Length: 188
Image 1 (cartoon, one colour):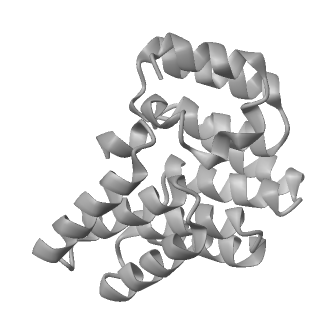
Image 2 (cartoon, rainbow, N blue to C red):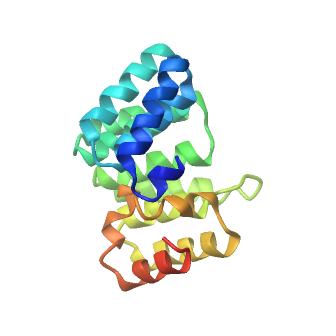
């Protein structure tokens, strides 16, 4: 994963294939491989990897969320929504709910996305990732809100900030000079 965070996708994929040889049914290895393929913008490969992983273990929720991301990247919003709904049914938490909110926004249903987001953010008893909020705001074209959420992530040293350089979910923000500044601040 470390190599992927810096854009060394070929080596990351090679190492994950090696790990997969040692433990082909590992949900985590299969999900990580799907994620790295997604970050490297090999969306078809990511989709195939994640669908295969789901056949191995249909209870491993990250596969559904990452599949949703890859399907959205391919423009298959209906299948992306279905995948996120399956993730949420299996494990209702802020991460799966905000993945659904992003999918709703990308499908053009901004009202549903805002409602889903509000239902999650309004729950003070659960941790809600600023990074996950930022990707929803980005999908809703609420750039200032996305950067405010990313600034919170920066201040709290959130783990997901290390994926900022490679995450396609942030592509709509890359043109903004604040994005380049943020990457420099976190040494990416």
